[in-house]
Picture (cartoon, rainbow, N blue to C red):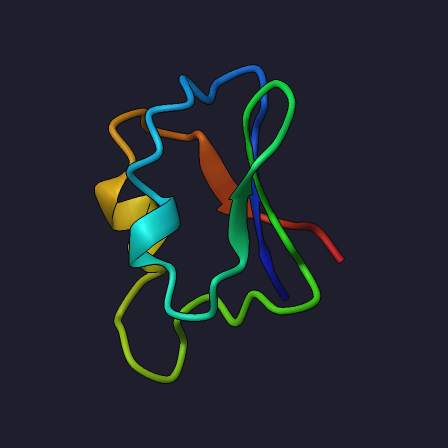
Length: 66
């Protein structure tokens, strides 16, 4: 599984990028993006993905459907 940033919701604040323990978040052309190949959803170390915890926009960062 991986997380997904809804580009139409993202305000490009950048709060998510520095908290990602796998370095999977990067700035895209319109919004920040998450590399689904390296995203581990912070499952080993945290109760919830750190990016979701710091994002100021509710519902902006979601689980990517398989």
